Image 1: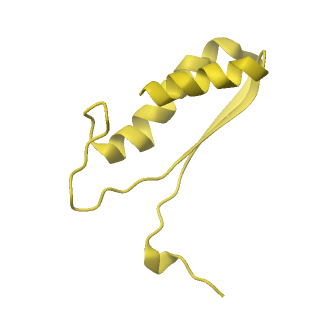
Image 2 (image 1 turned 135 degrees about the vertical axis):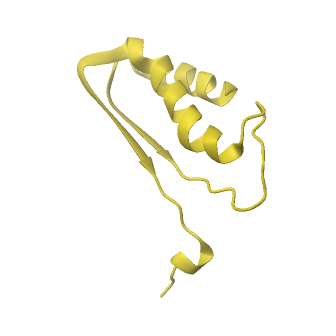
Length: 83
């Protein structure tokens, strides 16, 4: 989860406050269980824990009317079509 802490630092270097935060993640581990560097199940870590942690770390810099959106997208090779 150190990536979220680095991201917070980088964001706050350029911005005094946050009006909009969009968390976009989408990992699906499939049948093979994979762990994050922190030891959490990878899908849970990326899709749930990481956006929650980043949002929590940035809340103190949120403007009074700020908005937070959490998105997730899962695509398999069969979902991706090229023309």
